[in-house]
Length: 409
Image 1 (cartoon, helix red, strand yellow):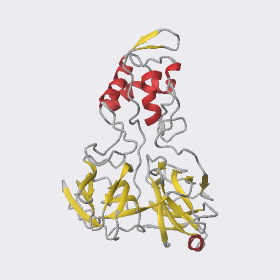
Image 2 (cartoon, one colour):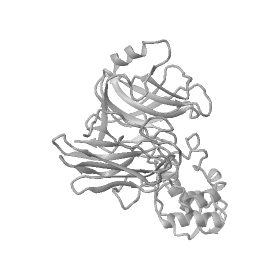
Image 3 (cartoon, rainbow, N blue to C red):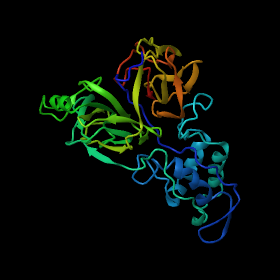
Image 4 (cartoon, rainbow, N blue to C red):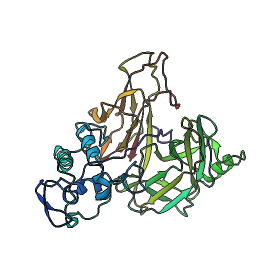
């Protein structure tokens, strides 16, 4: 059964180039020095793509390893950009376009956009005329504004390999408030494996936090206090999340965020002080909730290839759910994952080539209806090259077949 109050598992979010305005016609464009240049130029043809779809992360101070937000920065990366898009390593949009959608911020490049990067590189990465630059545009992975920024009150250094610790992030809202977007900023990307934000009562969180003198409290598997909902999550590669327009998740004046941080010390231990940014709505938004689908009945045999497991999650609430967002999730042995359902068992999300390092939330432009007495099916496939069976678990050596659904009534 679909359970809006159950555990949300983190997923990886993406950074990279994505779908933007159609590129120019490859005609003649002016250079910065006033001369004429033949072929695509940065300002006329490349920037209209990168500013919308790449610069949410590939910007100065962003989470990507390099910036693409200026000609000087992008031009030296021209060969890398051309190769990455030609081989479709970038953008890392794993869902097929033939299933579900249309999705907000689909980063699948058109062939014309791929050709633009190729021609721009081959013609010498021309700068063109700054006057050809498009008007500033906000990438899909950025908050329109930030209404609150909160940081862990103290730094924490993990002491074991997989250290799960919860910390209080208190929005201190005076009345019921709708969160319409968030951004989680790890203090140390070296040790932060993922973050999940649970909504809990302030009294239960402060009581739990006071049980010992160490910052926060141990919370493997969940918040370890009664939760009233889940707000969202972050994992490596993740960026800001903006919920579909007119929807959001409510947090009350007596509630706080129990921020579960999974620390992993495989690359060494260091102090972390993660922070959270929240964007609020008007209060008139439809209340949304996150429904986890936990398909945990699998047992992947040793040395198995193409092992498949599926599970159905019926909608037994007695009313239709409107599903807007989906986050499929497996670990490193996953090869395929697919979601389907509704009245006609329609395809919702299909990822035929799973990549643990490139996970994202897929938000539809229109809601997917899940009528009462239908449901959602989750289908997962793995390869297991090890000599031991693999089952469900939250450790890095375990596996999952999981998804969450962002839904309204």
